[in-house]
Each structure stands twice: as C-alpha cells, then as structure tokens.
Amino acid sequence: MKIVIAGAGIGGLVAALSLHAAGLRDVRVLEAVPRILPFGAGVNVQPVAVRELAALGLAESVRGAGAEVTALSYHNDLGQRIWHEPRGRASGCVWPQLALHRGVLQSLLADTVRDRLGPDALSTDARVTGFTPLDGGGVEVLLAGPAGDGPETRIRADVLAGADGLRSAVRRTLYPEEGAPRSNGTTVWRGVHRSTPFQGGRSMVVMGDGHWKAVVYPLAERPDGDGLVPVNWAVSRAATGEPGAPTASGDAFPAAVSGWRCGDLRLGALLAGAQAAGSFPMLDRDPLPRWSFGAVTLLGDAAHAMAPMGSNATTQAVLDARSLAHHLAAHGDPARALAAYDRDRRPPMNRLQLLNRAQGPELVIDLARERAPHGFRRVEDVIPAARLADVAESYARAAGLDAASVNAPSPYGCHRPPPGRSVEAAHES
Image (tube, rainbow, N blue to C red):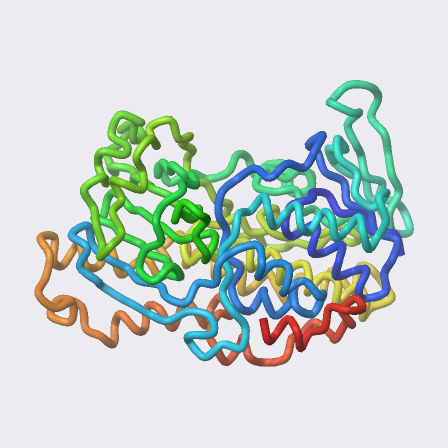
C-alpha cells in the first residue's frame, strides 16, 4: 500500500512514523517549504499524546527537549486566582504534560522520519495542489514544480492523507465551496522571550480581563548560566463586537497588559522589547460532515483547525496520526480503513472545535469578568466551585485529557519502539 502524506507538520510526521511502526513501509511525506526550519513558538503535548509518542519510542527525546508542566492556573487581570489544577503526572496521569518549541518538535520528528524511513521518505519543496481520484481506487496526487516553477507533476498512491494545515489544498479539493478560514475578530501576538523562572518553573498561567488575555509557560526547566529560561507567551485582544470595528492595533500592545502580575510573574518584564512581535488573526474552520472520501482523508488542522483554547491542537494531531495508522494497518481496503478512522476521530473533534469557539476551559475568565469586573474577595462568592470544576472536567473529558483516558492502554495498537528506546524507559522519564 503506497501512502502519500501532504504536509510535514506534527501530524503528518507522526503519521509517517506510526505507519512505519505498523508495518506500512511505502510512505512518503511531501512538504511545501524548501527547507524545514525551527520556526514558530511553543506548543503543549498533553499526556495522552505523550503516551502515543512513547509507543513510537519518542517520549524520552521529546521530554528532553522541553519542560514538564505540572500546574495550570487562570487569573483575572488583578492577578486573583479563579481556578487552579495540577497537570500531567501531578494530576495522577501516568504520562507528563510537556511544553516545547514547535520548531524543535517538528525538527526532531523530521530527523526521525529520515532515520527510520530513509532520506527519500520526506521531500521538501513539494507542494500538493490537489488530487484526482482514479477509477478502481487510489488517487493521483498533483504537485507544483519546485519553488512554484516548472511543470506540475503527478504521483499515484493508494492513500492520500491531507495534513497540510489551515489552508489545506486537499481539503479545498474536497470542499471547493468552503472559502477562507473563519475569523472571530481576535488578534494574537506571540513570541518566545528569555525570563527568570516563575511559579516554580513548571507552571502555565492564563490571565484575562474579558478583552485582553495572556498565556505564559516555560519551554525549559533548567535555567542557563544567566539564570534565564525560554518562556512562550501569547497575548490576544478580542474583537469589540461593534459592527465594522477594526481589530486591535499594535499601538495597544503590550501596554494593555504590562501592569499585570501574578505572584512572581510580571508580564511587563517578560514582554519588554515585544513591540516588534508579529500579530495575526485568530482563525479556525467549521466542523465537517465528513473527512474521508475513498482513498483520501484529512488530519490535524486540515481536518479540524480550532481556536487555541485548552492547549490542545498538537495533541489532537498526534492522536489523528495514530488513529489513521492503526486503521490502515487493521484494514486491507484503504477506503474501509479511512472510513473507520473518520468514525473514530471526526465526531469528538467536531465537538471540540465548537467547545473551543465557546472559550473551552478559559470560559472561567469570562465568567469572573462578567460577575466581578472589579475583582473579588473569594472566587467562590461569584462562581460556585462546582461550576468551575465542571468547566474544567467536562473539557478534559471531551478532549480525552482526563486521567482515566490518559492512563488507559492506547486504543491504537501495540507497536514496538526501536531498539534501545523502551516504553518502560520513556515511562520512567
């Protein structure tokens, strides 16, 4: 079975490794950019995804590339705590929650694909522009010429998996009338700055006032000789809600949040020099009625691009990849395999997309703002403890992040890790 994966992001690369581990060796990943470079900012790999990476023998290397997150807290703009919860192993999960630079993770996965599948398994400067179904099964994949020049080329495959992101050409071919991604008017600034460790060095902090929001977490646990660690930050400004109102301008950032503080975390100090940070609109996609069509399917952002609530997109791409490989290995017929994958992953992802549009677990910040715009003495005086717990727990169950789901055996088969990289050793890391 020849399998082509469009896109060498996290989902596409994990899919290639999972297919290889499942015994499907004719796999090729096609990436549009001429060279994979460590661009981007931070991502979180939730415990359920670490479990799946451990099955591929990758938990140890991923663990060594970032920081273990053991606590998450939500605060208002005054620094008052609305909700706090342990994360990863501190919450009873067998596996840790890990935060690391997206580019570091992508490069690690790309190197592993080349090492295990061979150097020709991953091609760059190979942009998939569409496909044509073939009579009797299979698909003809269309590729732009190198650097967009030259004649279009065609590759025949038994399966095409579109892991080509928010503006997926594979999705556009399946849904030509869909149009551009959806924006809710929110503007986001993101970056990585070096800072002194805060709140014990393993905490994620989310602060907000109902309009502005800041998310901060470390990307390394141990400070360098200068006492600093890389810290990922994201600051967003919600749309005003007024028809025709412009999006937030860079003039308001970072002044709007520079006075926010939470314990030993000072946003003003962290964001010093961030005026040059790039901004972009917050985008997502509508849930789809179907991902798989014969020999073609979608995964990751191409299938379910979602608003970045709950630090969950990377994790769900990993789970998509593992599910896809599992079903292709279990079914001799590609169409049946892709239909089973669709039934497994699409319904929970459709629900998660809608939950994220409704703010996901970050809803508690908006509740606090609505009920206590000037702060509170005790959060329980304005939001019942049971309501706060329900927001967190219901989201965790929907995303498969609760301890019961994480600690269950993987539903995606038992694949042997490479020699010298045992699941037990990854578990103990």
